[in-house]
Length: 89
Image (cartoon, rainbow, N blue to C red; front, side, top):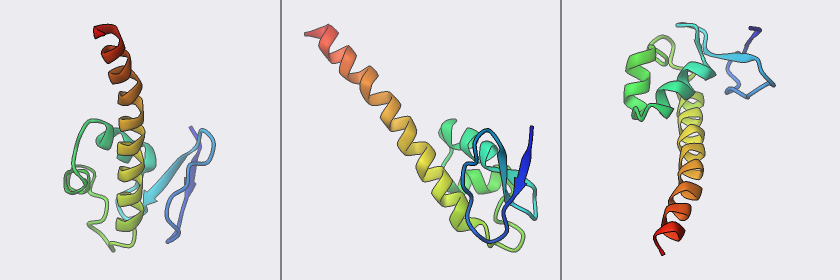
């Protein structure tokens, strides 16, 4: 696995590379996405990963990644829900 360091720029997905979002704690975007996909709130993601507890400059990037992960999860749920409604009809 390749790791790309991001310094005070917010994280961006770069192909298959993991991006370190929190340099203080070494937390990657993949770890943040896993925590968000598991249903954890933003505060829980901060607590569970340690991101944002050092200098705090990554907090906005972490919040954006959590929001993206939640939006992706909702998008994945909608087709399944629509299919279930169609099957019931």
